[in-house]
Image (cartoon, rainbow, N blue to C red; front, top):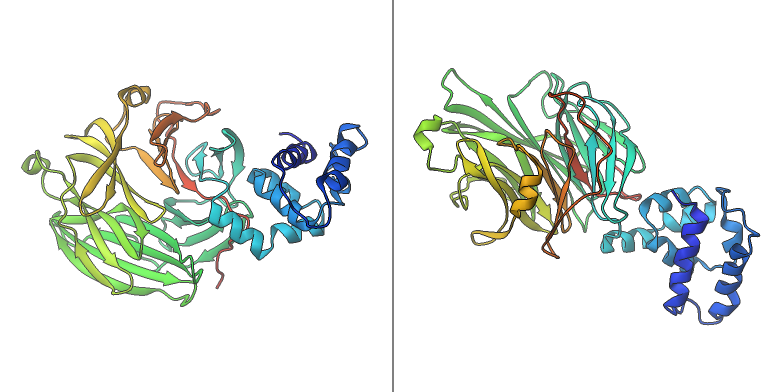
Length: 416
């Protein structure tokens, strides 16, 4: 990784070339050029972590402009240079501008081994894999939900604990699950942060067999927020012919959860065995969606991309994936793109399920049996592979799992 001074200098040169007017009283000749010359002539030791001396003449407004151009890894390091730099980076103005612009793009964390805190994080802007260690280790990992700079981890144990964390600042809050000493067959967890009130909300959906009849399943939904800090059971019902799954998302005040048919496979060979539950968080009303899936799908993943509900699905029947498509929920499911065959073939042998998550305009897809990571940009309508992942498959049963998160230095999890 380049030194902070070298990266800082490159961005300062960029601003100078753009002719950015940062002050009314001084010209760039008076401040920027002497600063650059001070570095180029070798009078600054760029290996030193505290390199603010060469930029001491720069006003706060110009420093803020430079920080906004830096990758988040360098912004994180810059906070430790001085109290002044730390104050600028932690200011409300810098936080608001960086969050609104989505400067850093969603990253993807991939575990090195299951049940392990070590992994690699992929930065799509720098196109680099970084060694990354989670701030804790879950003894029994469960679903993961991410939104707005926070990640919610569920510990699938009898106590069912939830952990809310900012992976960049490593700030962590341990929250109790909705019910203690009560395990369920399937969990789905979703996280949301209101952009106006900044209230953090968590929704947990649980599904368990309620009798010896496989077609009969209990289904419940519990909610908790940083405002109430107490759990509320909003749905408790019994389903016939359907059960809740492990994929869910909150989008525009609606909690969406995938439902699975419990009918025998042979009875529904030509039908899609998947659907959606809709739960309005404000009205507290549950609906079983009747909108049909666009085609037979082996599995689906739900993603909130800038307020649009996106579905990534494996196209196929009888648990055989023949392609992967991406749809947006409008009046009906509208196809956005279908994975080109050359990328689909690049995964090798693909199971009936795969991993997919995303945020903003970026969607990640990878097979559990391979560390290869594929990216789809919704705005650019482009597919591309990530840089080659340094991880290798150690044994035939080695599975690769991961999740997408939005790096942020400003949001913090609520605490009890």
